Amino acid sequence: MSKEALFKEIFQANSKKIYHLCYGYTGDDDIANDLMQETFMKVWQNLDKFRNQALISTWIYRIAVNTCLSHLRVEKRQPKEELTDNIIETKGEELSEKNEQVAALYKCIAQLEENERIIITMVLDEVPYPEIATISGISEGNLRVKIHRIKQKLTELYNRNERF
Amino acid sequence: MKDFEALQDIWHNQIALPKVSHEDVLKKIKKTRTGLATKLLVEILGTALFSAMLIYLWIESPFRMWTTHLAMFIFMSCCLYYIVALIGNYRRITYDNLLDKPGEYILYLKKYKHDRFIFNTRKYRIYSIFVTAGFILYFIEIAFVAALWITIICIIFTFLWIALYYFVLMRIYIRREEAKLEDMIQNLERIEKQFEDS
Image (cartoon, rainbow over all chains, first blue to last red; front, side, top):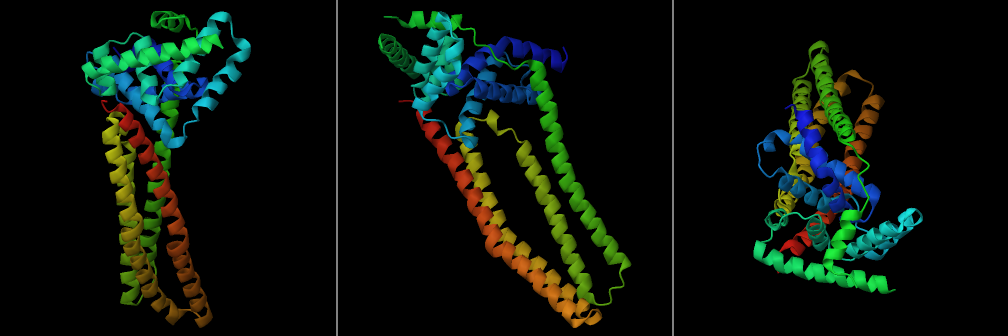
């Protein structure tokens, strides 16, 4: 398989999840697209090194997480309040009821800590726990505890948000 | 009241999709790679061209004094040093640090910051001393062949420029670069702490 064909296959298999990760992290559609693009540029540049790895998605997540974290290098993260307002303002007009729920979910995700946001988007995308442990560098035992806590926190935030 | 499974359903129903296709990524890769390569090529070619001009000047000009030859040798050495430093920077730029763990990336940045500081202070001081010495040696012959006022103007202009660069511009440059790197390191360290097992 040519490098381009392989890249296309990898892109199609992973881009949606990586986009969700970046969107969950930044809460901004344009920045999420930029970060996803940057992630896949790194994937392309290093494809030869990793083409024989069984879990290429773990490797891509790892790059995406580092890309999101390194995003801080060039642009200071917006305060959470601004971030959440941004989601609502920019998306407000085009929201259907279903999308409203998605926007509310992203709004809640944006209120989590940075590492919590990354972990929960992977959980929501049903990435296996051992893979999340490898990506985030946390032992599986501790990760389970952490995920349990983040799930509770997110559910509380969502329900509280829904009441108002 | 919704439980986490309900939130997961909402998540899977989202229609937010990336606007970037794999073709867009490939286009950008080609553009970025070309851009980076072109920039470095221009710098390397520029330095090489300047070196070639110096060599030509050195060979073709009827320099009579050994001091001028020594000045030329110093200038050439400075050019060579710059080219080597350029290649070193290129290698560091192309090192894909994002593939490492954040902790390693922080160490990489700290090392880079330290090296840059050494380069911009100690090494630049030595570089400036050599360039100044080169000009002093070069102006000895100029003083013999040109009018006195031309020599004085040349000397004043050259050393004012070196002093301005060394005492003002370089310090601003170092301060800005240091602040930028420190900001990057602090941000990454803050994030890294959040990933530690608690």
